[in-house]
Length: 271
Ligand code: ADP
Ligand code: MG
Image (cartoon, rainbow, N blue to C red; front, side, top):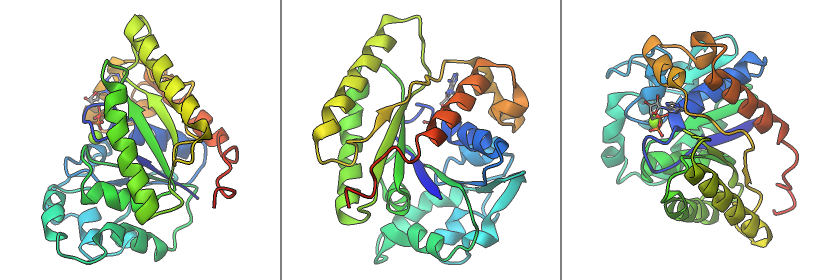
């Protein structure tokens, strides 16, 4: 199983759109996929018409030790399961504050989970708090959606510091597998310049001993496409909402690129 946290501490960069539509694209190929919504805003859950109201089965019950992942997981379409979020999750940060091992609760729950999956994706909140730490401690890969604007690289360094901290303290298997450029406007020079900067940054990291030394900038850019913004309000993935759109095309290609990238990374040799 590949396990991937979709992470960026900045909001509005396309994390949820990527987590949802990548999950849907992989499941459509016949792969068994589970998406965990770790964001109290519950946008991924809503995208699948799962209401985030208190008392519904959610990741909150799992993190607070009341239920197992199997008990809260819901099958939303063939091969695709979702562990939904809830507005209650906003309180988890405080509630878990004094709990020893609070960063590794999700990892422990996943270890006890018998389901066989090809992909586990986690949609992270726009922060670097205990929810994101749980995601990073539980997965092996980080996928970073990045909107190519002026300060994109600036925000990236804080994010990578967090990944490095988690890799050294909690999860030595953690690697940044890639950056996906989102909300991409191919007509602007800025987008192309930022893309080139990001590519150069990761090329330079190639020889360093850091969790992102093998990270790629995916060749697939996710273009700005209004259909992607409309799909959530219909409770559908882009493939069910607008199969012929640029959005569907881009996420299909990203899924293929991600899936084919497996095995190219020397993940065992680094130890
Ligand atoms: P995040 O999870 O990082 O906060 P979202 O995925 O929720 O970001 O995206 C922020 C907003 O931008 C949402 O309204 C979403 O529908 C919209 N959006 C995301 N990606 C695209 C895109 N490629 N084209 C147009 N709108 C997009
Ligand atoms: Mg989101």
